[in-house]
Length: 105
Image (cartoon, rainbow, N blue to C red; front, side, top):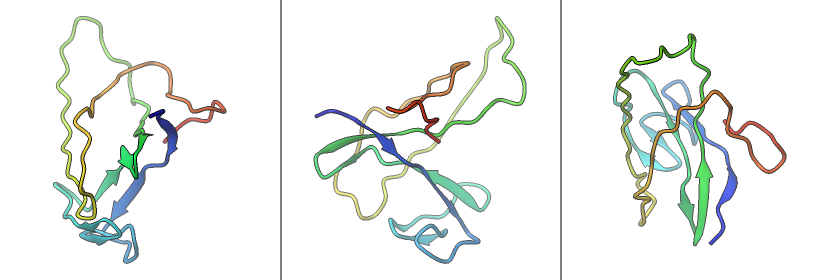
């Protein structure tokens, strides 16, 4: 299965009463771990491996020889019956781009 790099992330927010609301949305029911919002990505659907990326530009450069701690939390939405077991983190000075060099956000 070839990955589809066009999976657009979704911002779920308590101010939204539709399919991208918190806690109720198109994927089911999920409260934000902290605050009022969370982001969602698609990694697999109907036999297709998707590649959804969340990206952010850092407000300052990382310092050499300094340790950083990064954590994130994953929750399978209520409508899914399968899950991805390889979600990770990648730090780069270059944005991840898709087939047409568009920045995937």
